[in-house]
Image 1 (cartoon, one colour):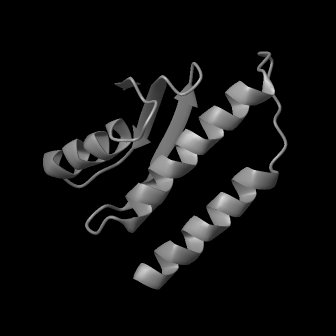
Image 2: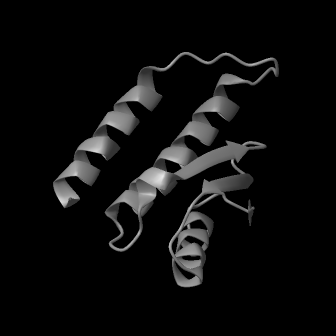
Length: 97
């Protein structure tokens, strides 16, 4: 299971690094890179943490990394709090929703 999470994480990181951006909003390159870096850091930390099913958690970063929006399913309130704390621990994150 750990190997599967590692492969999924590496795949996710590679996709994020080459994926084109399609959005109605205008972003500077710096904002996009900052958001992508923060999102990738959070996903990598979630993936590396035991007892978190990170494949069922979506991470969106807005406002130049200041606001992180988490959606998905968790098995318990403790897992939810752990996911929140991990997201909030990444440098540059000011608010987690």
